[in-house]
Amino acid sequence: MSLETDLLLDRRRLKRRLIFWRVLAVVAVCAALIVAVGRAPLPGLAGRHIARLNVSGIITEDRKLTEAVAALAKDARVAALIVTIDSPGGSVSGGESLHDAIAEVAANKPVAAVMAGVAASAGYMVAVPAQRIFARSATLTGSIGVLLQTGEASGLLSRLGITTDAIVSGPLKDQPSFTAPLSSEGRQYLQGLVTDMYDQFVTMVAEGRHMDPARVRALADGRAYTGRQALQLGLVDAIGGETEARDWLAGKGVSRDLPVRDVSTRGLLERTFGASLGAGLADVLKSLLGQGLTLDGAWALWQPRQ
Image (tube, rainbow, N blue to C red; front, side, top):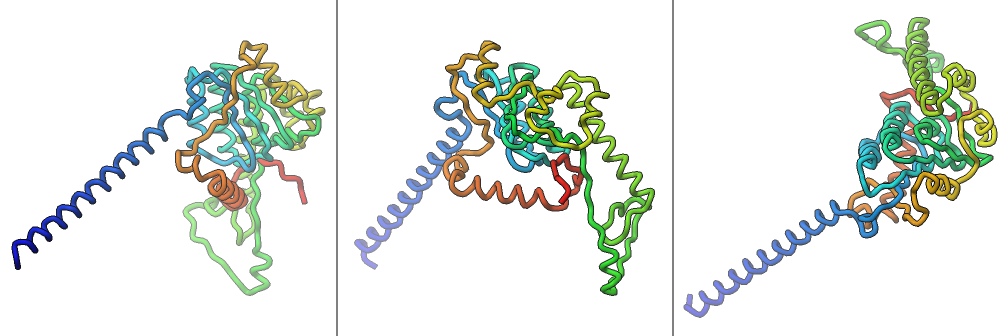
């Protein structure tokens, strides 16, 4: 092999290495920019503003969301919080975690809740920490209570000649069961769970609305109320929407000129692509999962009997 050929091959190898390191450097810079932008506040959020938390659809446990809401309590840029609700409820634990995060904010700054079409069960639960609750006259709210629902298909299985067996460590381990009727002990045990969670719900409402627990229990038989009825019963404070909430906040010293920024847990890529794809897919998955069977089977959900 000639010297000229060797030099040509060496030059090509050096060129390939140079291209590799250049590409690697560009990738590293891009990655650093993505991390920096993802952690930094978006333009316009650096100044003082009012946070808006949108609660819609089925409420489930969402660690990122509850952490983001709780962080508002210590964020000096956030002057107040508006919680907009359009939800029939959800899991008891999901409502409780969001309720507690909102209560943490309300202990430090003004919080107003604004109800849309439906704010029932856990949807009402997340409203009660607010110092002021607004509802439309036709809003459906209330439905204070807990639901634990199960199916039982032993009759159908027996007709099909199908038998089932369960090896359990204790008599209540398989209660409730889809393949066997509830025992009297199982019904009593499950009723105790529901009653305890119901008592917790009543306590949240009594403390948030500054009402006597006995008065709350009289209203908390599971029924929903219109916004106008809820106002008369003391479950909400006023008829109105976000405009009226801004007026109330102004009376608390929160300027009407402050911008309103939505609370978001989405990262940079989700903020870029989620508007068309991510948000819709997330809502579909959340709705589907909300209808399924989960370990947290107790729901604070407005569910009229069909």
